[in-house]
Image (cartoon, rainbow over the protein chains, first blue to last red):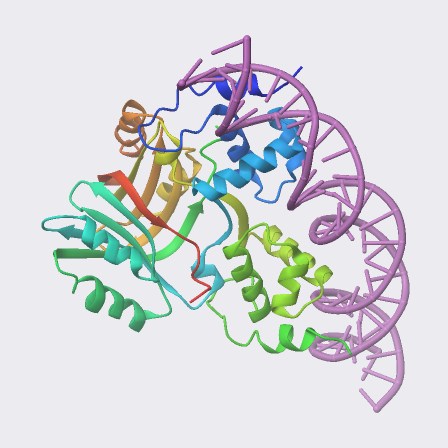
Length: 168
Length: 168
DNA sequence: GCTGAGACTGCTGAATCCGCAGATGGCATG
DNA sequence: CATGCCATCTGCGGATTCAGCAGTCTCAGC
């Protein structure tokens, strides 16, 4: 018989979150495997999700190309040393997009998200030291047109950092 | 000649961020490589940082064992579908640690950090849907002893997510 | 019913991973 | 100052894994 095509086609009835790529259940299972270990061999993943090694490789490549996932090393910058980190809440007047795009363009901003609540944007900033952090927040972020106010939360200690939403 | 021992020993004068593992410049360079591509072959990394393939492998293994870094697939849960996500700021009275530990123990909390500012803790929560999110915030987090108040920021759109502090 | 696109399998050669000596330098001890 | 121990690096060979390429099958559209 043919194999996995049954699962790959029949299962994508759900997952309709609204936006683009449409991930089916098998790809989700592959992502879960790679959330546990980003270097897990394709053959092992294939065995776990019921697919051939080549099929897993094709799917992973596609997920990477589409930007649905990325396989990377993550660290706690504070542990790695000599760096200041902060979460910055930003209040904006008018359109959010230009401000969000400007923040996205800054190398020091590792994480930019639009939110509902008393902040319009939340930004995680990674800096070399206090001077650098001050400059980014005070001179660069607060200077952006449309930014009404900001509030900073300097990181003291990272307690948890996982990517395991798949496995639970 | 012997090789990398010069760099590996002589360089760890800095990086004294305070805590334990002490990462030298070569390991930092390895991490940078893996931040760009978590599946990059050891030989390629070795060529980039000036080490043999076996040495890179040993160092990577050690960094993983020590918990300094992890190699994983990361996604935008909102893109992957059917999930609600929020940043929650938490105000605590008394000792932070027990509260932080309790949050860390929750599967829905992917990211827990102690901060200075008007919140004592910032927590990123990933949930299945609105009901789930409500339950986690209202019934579980706010019910923890020591939690004085919380403020939630529901994610509308993730604009940027990188792990490239090394490369800039 | 035919055709094109998409996805999976199986295969083969090349590249990569993995474990294991052996060697070298730093460091503490005598 | 000599010696032994520990940590790290190198080099190598075998097993595993990766990467590309037909060929097959299903589904959707005409």
